[in-house]
View: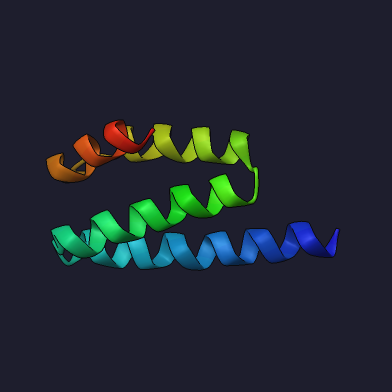
Length: 75
């Protein structure tokens, strides 16, 4: 259970960075944060979480077009 809590905490931290980058309009920072999140899920074999994050990123209102394209390329 501790490993799951640790993964959740790390993911939450990455999501906070992505949110700040997106709110600041930092395209490059948002791209990097998005890829970091998807890579983190991949490396930890968190497939459901990875798929959920792809859906969230693709549906998010105001998400930068460049980031959506990047998600499609990496997904």
